Image 1 (cartoon, chains in turn blue, red):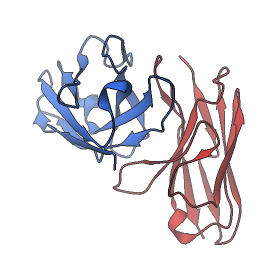
Image 2 (tube, rainbow over the protein chains, first blue to last red):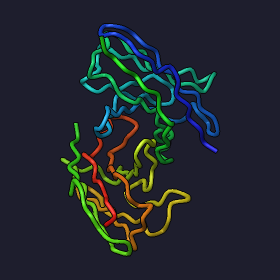
Image 3 (spheres, chains in turn green, brown):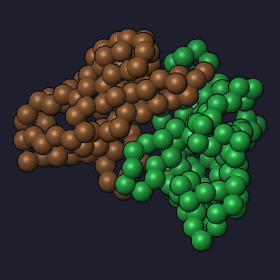
Image 4 (cartoon, rainbow over the protein chains, first blue to last red):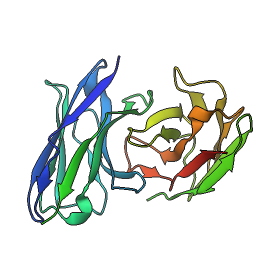
Length: 120
Length: 108
């Protein structure tokens, strides 16, 4: 069974930093693209960042570009999101989401989410 | 980036009804479209991927079609447990993902 488990969500003041982690199991991690998607309270889903299986290509939403860094450790089947210069509008539930494999197969799979709160 | 326009934003229907949700892409996305269901306080879960492929374990009353720029999700014989918000999503390994604004389905 495919499982994604996020951790690291917490409260930070504006300007602070936080690192989210996503541990995975049940699939061959290093051939799948992985993504972060967030949802602010009462709002819709917003894609944040993604990277391919090798980690060599990364993608960011304009709202986080230059502040957030996505990375992965394929030896530990883990995905990370380094969040710097946090703003109040970064407050959200952050979901780790599996994309497709290198051949374009597979369906999205969601973790249960971790909550980030940015306030003074 | 590709924009996804989803309609309606909400709908109300009775048990047993058939409902349809539409999603339009700002340019062709081939079949790179998924539909997700989200219930309050829960993570989204995928219903449909590759525009029309039913995810394992999802009831067959859910179906979807489309390609290019026009896509639809149909729920036949609506059930009380189908009360949720539904999102379409453009997904691709080599470009940003985009979600529709969501459609809230209420059971009368």
